[in-house]
Image 1 (cartoon, rainbow, N blue to C red):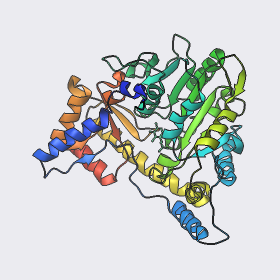
Image 2: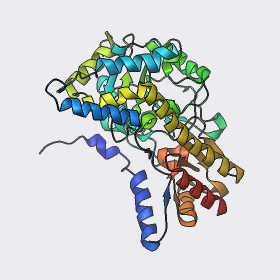
Image 3: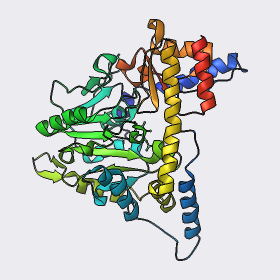
Image 4: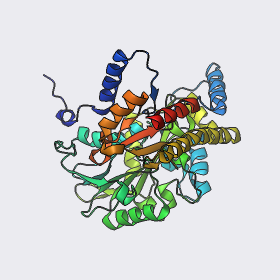
Length: 408
Ligand SMILES: *Cc1c(COP(=O)(O)O)cnc(C)c1O
């Protein structure tokens, strides 16, 4: 009989979202007339920017012609898209990143887990708590951890708490680690890191020869021009960092699928024998073997994000969600809730009132306000007592949800 990957059995059975669905279903059975507002999802709600749709329509027309047909493209992405990315997202912010160092993909979720393909076993790994669950689960599946404790922490991982006391900033670990996952602007806490805070991590990584995996899926939501959008705005980051970026949240591509990963050519790792190898070549080999590129049509849509029209339309899109976030923050804090995040990220991290735990507050909001959010404890032990509200919704729904929460 075929052997399975037993590491999958260590996973805490996809607990969060199925449990939310179960409680919503039970509630709806009892109250079929209730008009639920869902501020729990991490998915965008507004339509694609017009410039992207036009570019994709044009690309489809091209594909219908003999001369404009495209079959397999380069596994790394078309050079015109990689050049547009390098110029607009990096060189324009004085980051020394070239088109060759950009690998276009169908998602940051896949990239941030696939990256483990080129990293060996035995790395000491640090994640934040709370955390985007993909970082942890992909390591569990690969066999980089032991079992989960009853609390929910996996043996072998170093957890860096993000809490109100440390301002939701990731503090340097006391023991050295080799691989560090950082996500700023942060999902789920909505926190942001400034240049000094990122520089601390880059210095740490260079001192300890560790690798930072920097997830910047929400960089477009940063409102303060002095804040870094990329880890490569920090000196020395080319020697110790990989960055994940996505068109998903910035341009509404969650259903269209386009993202990219930046691997500087200067990035090095070592083999079991101590031989020094560059990571770029390994990832290039990995992508060439296991990936066949993003569709031509979608890459043309992503390219249009950088056109003048596309830039102004995506700015408007981000503005819309950030106005929702401001609304959530203001209404709740005026009503006496303790709120964090939501200023440079589309998530507001709310402290559950009355000493409620995350699930008790979930049930309270569901029953009393018919509003759905995400229990913070689902993102990690340190998320207990918190609640994530997402700004991805219509203005009307956000306004209505705030009215209801305030009145309970
Ligand atoms: C939404 C999200 C992404 C983007 O994932 P895609 O696969 O590109 O849609 C990456 N990281 C975090 C933390 C996210 O919340």
